[in-house]
Image (cartoon, rainbow, N blue to C red; front, top):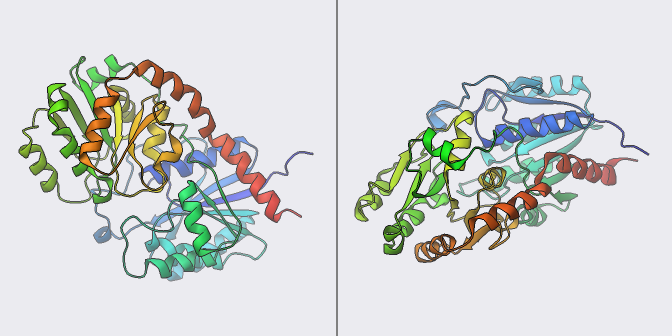
Length: 380
């Protein structure tokens, strides 16, 4: 007997807002639609007040994605709007509402809308984090409020699923963060380096994405100062917008005399430029101090590039040590040791392992898992 098709609403960031969560919401929506489910996205008319947003702009200047219906109905800090947004969602008469949860700031808005939805609608919290990387007063209160509004939870890493269980005994499941289907084609290393005006024969590490203290760019820069890496002329590309002062990082670069080995692109990288950055790199580096899961790991896998990750949170759930990536401790010396180790290994073997391993990270497998989880817990 086939699975009954569902009406699904996904609440969370989407175009015209930028960033990895918006991209993954759009990819998820497309996957549900392709599986035959009537699915659309409800996103924000206003996401963050400008004074709370540390980046240069919240918006993606590119065209709206194909194959996705997006409604901009939610004002994140206007409680009166939440009532009207809930009414509009109720009129869509969905079977399931998936609410993307990544930040306690959003809990009053998302939780209140969820509480206002019809009792016949099942609310599934899709959780990137329930314990934030950078904790603030009232985080726990806000997260518990949001979780009280949900009927069940889907986590994108085992570590988050464990965190959920400490806060709620409602049904929960886990599926590894899928790889987005709109990241662009793999291009040759030669072409990628030509696009970025890089040395065709040099060795390059890539640190990609928003720069935050917990992501440990300082640890990576200290590791890069290791004399063994200097002797091998290992370079680093830092491609992402900083959410804090760059002074600390620039001081480390100067301390180790690495001005000619570190390329800083302190800006949001538009989607059309992403393939060049990943395909130009030998190794993606995620030297995080804390993490749950990261879309950067999945981007590396998409482009067949191995990643070096620190063994924190759920990062090591997505790689096989020595086959699709390398693991280090949160220590510059050990990070440097692992980079040296990598450049003594067979890059071709990594690529072949990655091509096989990444098959398990599809959005279509996620949809099958999600619908099975829903049916087990809620279908009569």
